[in-house]
Image (cartoon, rainbow, N blue to C red; front, side, top):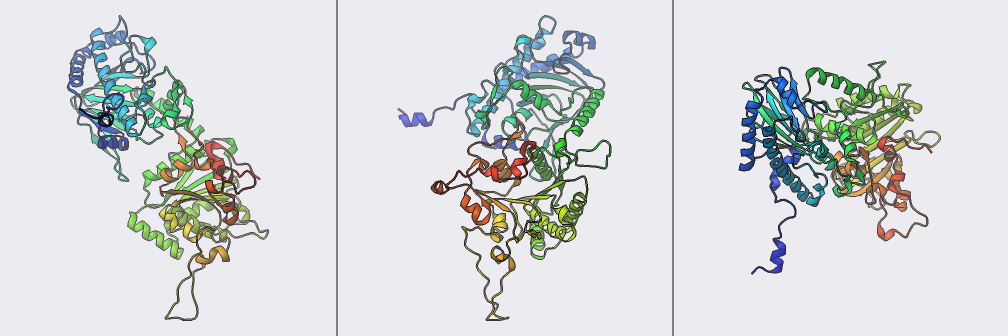
Length: 613
């Protein structure tokens, strides 16, 4: 007889039984799609539905429109796209006017597909350390075809007939949690992304599960959405698409997903729909939607491409959406080994964090070995590569624009090396008044110096410089943390004797003694976080400025770095902001502030503006 310990050890998991293994879960999260064999029961139900659809679509268009009149745009009923496709969308049973056999077969596919996708959601929850019960209210009423419109949710089953050689669907992602797609012929393609390699299309060889925008939002952007398209099939094809979406019956508790508060399901749905074009609509409708979307984006801001355009002057770029930000220009210089896709990911996150358009100056990559070699030449010899010269020209043009009152320069990794070289040139060529517009913020700084000469009054030429560093970021340890040592770190060891030159004199580089001899040699306030990691989005912004993608704003809690108490002694000793260690909590005689109160950059999040002192 098994012992109690054995029984506890082999207790089955809560919720439905696991379906995916670790490798399949990882592939689904990274690619946003997964080719998945189906159970014999579901395959049989889908086959029966396909057989019936062959005869159903032979009826006249008028008969099909009469049985299933279009409602809610393309979200319910029969819809015909001339020379492309026709399809029926079910969100509940239609009553006496519909095709009862079609709906019975569809209900069977709906229920089994819902069970399948529910199991996958529970697998994702288990793998994330969350309870499978987090889906109970979110899926309330979605796993079976509702009997009437009163029980209708956002979940749907769509049955397509694509015409031979013509039926298409443009590149898109779905809005729901998960989607199951099955077709009678090839035609569905999924976009595969392998690291920094150029994404490429792969043909779906069988049933496909796709991650939707809702699941990505609930997962705080950790899962990639499944980008897919439909290309023409010479024979034409039938396709069944079941999209599992969240219920509209309950508030969604974000705390169960690691966030804060709750969100109304209707508001979540509207926020997800914002900016999406219905790819199943007619061509003229799609074109109209794109124009309306472009107009909306122009009134707001672009992260894609970086700019909002002034409609009165197409050549005038970087116009922020908010009148209070009208004089601001934001610039980003990326780090080592970043291609255009990673750069766009950086720009997207920066734009969402600060709610401002961001101009990306691309520090192009030639592969890690050559990029590291370039860093060595740039840093050691102050060698201005083409990227540095391009950045200097762009920043100079913006600083000399009389309509610009503030220029915020953000750089990461090797981008900080290039930004420092640009800054050295600016000190030689720009007036003090123009440089007063500049604010500088670096992450994982790899440079060996950061100059900021004092004005006659003693004030620094650039008023605001902040460096954000993870202590165990090894790029930073060879960069800013080596050349701007902390008071808690030992002084740099002087160089040894040059035996062939002199046995009496020692030689040391200026940078090693910069803290004592030149206080502006590595200027700026240092924000030190006791953590590893060098990636901008993952290791810096996700921890310093955590985004709630459902609410679309930066949020903090009591455990966030920015909400911790400042160690005042470190701040006074060497202008370093770091959390107060518990053992030293009794040292301050007054209430020390929070780290966010010392961070000027944090005061820009969510579109805010710092208060000038």
